[in-house]
Length: 120
Image 1 (tube, one colour):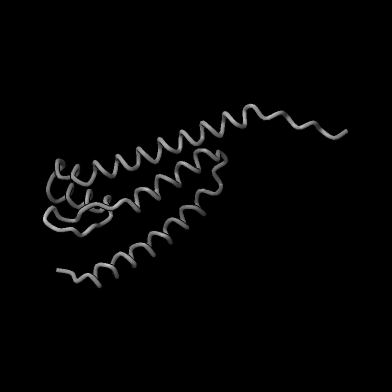
Image 2 (cartoon, helix red, strand yellow):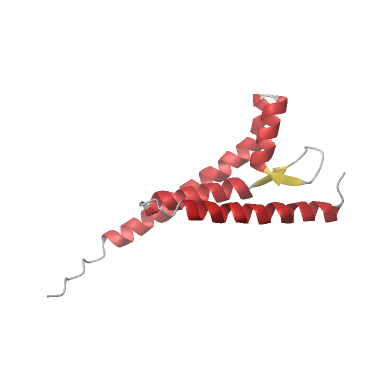
């Protein structure tokens, strides 16, 4: 059993590692020429790394949902994956949906912008 100090320390280490991984992913996706795809890939990775879920059904501790889904899927079978996999996929779907809404609004606003007149 973990103490609350150990629990918070574990989350601190995880978040520092996640921030480092997100920074590396951000740098790795820089060459992608389509801003919309680059934006979407970055948001999906951030969502997957940062969505938490309950580690155990009898405890209140949270862990990264993708880790819980992977571990339960491997050791308890495919049906156990969905205990943490469902909120993880719902969170990723929400991020993708909101991103599509924002990109759609941005496209509508930029579509009506007048073309700049070239200097003669």
